[in-house]
Image (cartoon, rainbow, N blue to C red; front, side):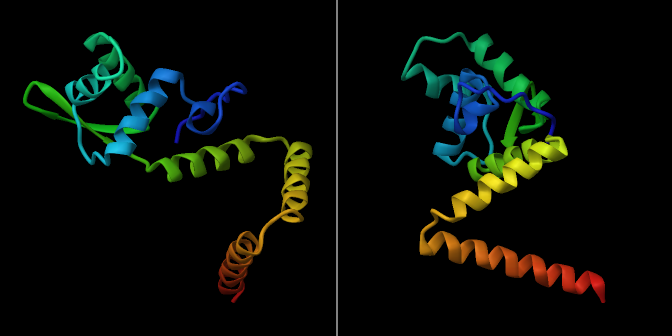
Length: 144
């Protein structure tokens, strides 16, 4: 994943993507497209608003440049594929943000996580416990 700027005014996918980029990815993910063309996206967007084909084309190209989409040439057009599900994109974004924090800020982020765990439901605690157990298993395998 390339490095993304965080947009504090945005949340979820919009925390790192501009609104039109996020709108396009929302369409791709919501429709479950495994492959699509710019014209597919443009047609889907026209049901909600007037938007130029070239605007959609430029934005899809930017998503490719940001390594969110893959593409291959098929005749005279490109066919695109998302490199991420919505969930895996948010997970990768969160991981990247955390890894880019300087150590004092990482410590603060971990402290906030611990504070949040104190408010967690039983189901959330069970998921966290499973993640910790899996990681301990990985560490145990590495030490042998």
